[in-house]
Length: 411
Ligand code: SF4
Ligand code: SF4
Image 1 (cartoon, helix red, strand yellow):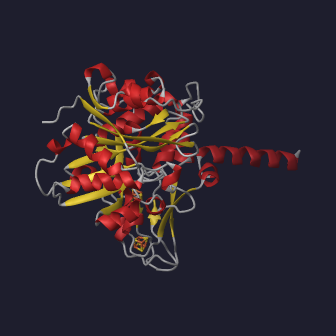
Image 2 (cartoon, protein in one colour):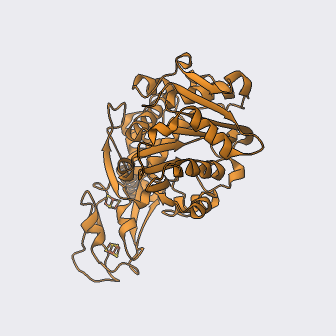
Image 3 (cartoon, rainbow, N blue to C red):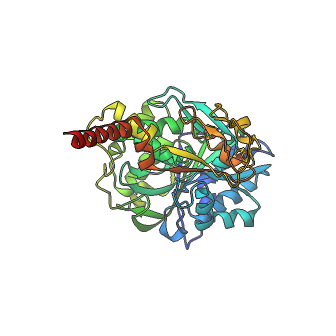
């Protein structure tokens, strides 16, 4: 049994990340989670986007390597390093692969013989959210429930919308690729978005957290901020307590991080640090006030009509499937495997001339078809002008324009 009330704060001396990591995990007796040999362990870093380690956007590869070394001591059968990046228009479905390479994490995995697996490359699952605050279900990787242990590897960064990104916010990465953009659009208000983050965290709920406080970001995080060499590794079990503790270290009022109180109310942890035993450094000894962003940069400060946020999330920022005629062999794999029957075969089976038929209203953007297509004929793009034009809103605008033109001609 683990003592959930233990938290460890360790200094990284002379850039020896591995030593600090082992000290942090040993101090909280994390070995008690490694119940037997042959376990499957998933390490979940922050892979927001393709940035090199020195920019402090993604979890530092030295932290990932140290975590791998720690897990290897217990003879696991498999270690996965997995996440899903935000969908970058330029690289589309290859966004996570690109981030893994640029962040230095792919090289670490190759050297360590560990599988580096984008979550969108695994089988999908529709997960019901336990005690939902705002999201009833999420689509993510089946792998989340197939492994024996998930270790969260967040990085400490300030965030222009949520003020902090660390333990709870890191699991937003389990939402696949550009589905993150549509989640933001569905919940533009900070209050609703915070609820969505808590719901998303509660689906995977990692059993252990190892925080990368080596190179961090302050100011305009999570990607455009300034780098701070904080030289810390933190470990613990309670994500709410750990995020609260990080707030205290970087001089941020935890009450401003709305998802913390919501996560506590949902039973994911406690903000009462006096209930916890802090081992290693004290908060006072490592305190380092960060530049805190203004906040609510992308948030709408008043309640937005639900039909408009639904329109933005479900229509405007929606990924649209594209079948490449020149590549598609009409093999049928996509329509046979779509979990919700959103693809059907064309009336005429003429490869090179016809492509499968996509039903956008049924599609849950799980990206399975793109992954399974043997010909790389499926691609997804967020095409905002097209989405608007083909929606009821675009139709209404076109109708009004048509009426105006007709009136101008005949009057
Ligand atoms: S799986 Fe690929 S090649 Fe096969 S029918 Fe679908 S799009 Fe075409
Ligand atoms: S069409 Fe593709 S992305 Fe949409 S639900 Fe089916 S398999 Fe998933």
